[in-house]
Amino acid sequence: MDRKLAQTPELLTVPEVARLLRLTRASVYGKIAEGEIPAVRLGQGRASLRVRSDELEQWLQGPER
Image 1 (cartoon, helix red, strand yellow):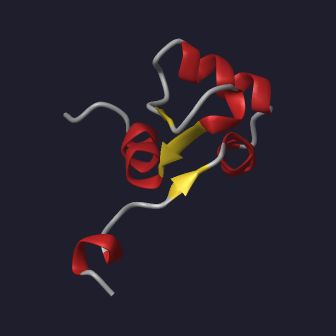
Image 2 (cartoon, rainbow, N blue to C red; image 1 turned 90 degrees about the vertical axis):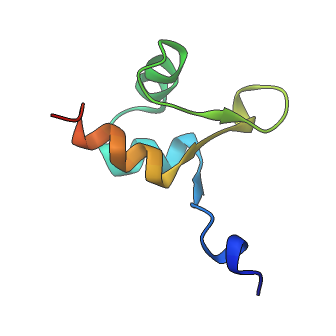
C-alpha cells in the first residue's frame, strides 16, 4: 500500500459525525454551513459532504492556546 494513502485521514459522512457528536444530522449540516465544522464536498448535493476525521478531532479540541 502507498505510504501516503495509509496516512490519509478518514472521511466521515454527516450521519457518522452526528452519531459521534450526539447531534442531529440537521445540526451538523447547520454547523458545516456556518463554517463551524470543516467539511469537503465530493460532488453535488448534501450527501456529498464529508468531514475529515483529523479536522473533526482538531475542531473538538477547540482553538489552540
